[in-house]
Amino acid sequence: MDQEQAEGQQTRFGSRFARMFGYVTPEDRSRWEQMRAQNKPNVNAIKQGTKSLLGSMMEFGERNIGAKLDAAHRVAAQQRFEESHDKVVNQRRNPNTRNIIESVDYEPKDGREEIEPDLEL
Image 1 (cartoon, helix red, strand yellow):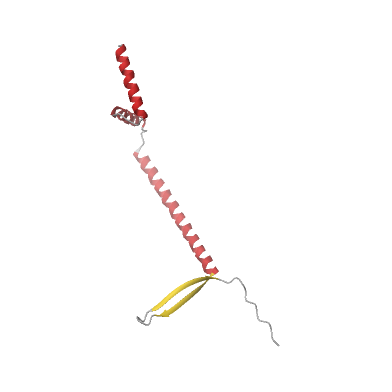
Image 2 (image 1 turned 90 degrees about the horizontal axis):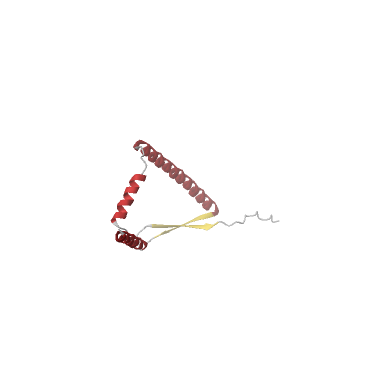
């Protein structure tokens, strides 16, 4: 019996030593699976389906609201840009192909205001 205890301790020490280096035995895996199965809560399928449905609906709503808000911010930024920049359109004709080449540039508006010319006598 003393020899059996020594062998048991040796295998326990060996498996503990092997686990320190990441070795997992098939017995360990089966024991873990069994513990997972015991600890797994029983959940009603209808309740679980309802929860997932509501969760996905909430996520869709949040994304939809986020997209609308993002679009509103982009529109506001575009309006601010158009108010602070002048649009300069350059058109020229390509003599070989008779196409009109158009390019659009945006230049910052001049912040200075025009003042009326003085009256001359």
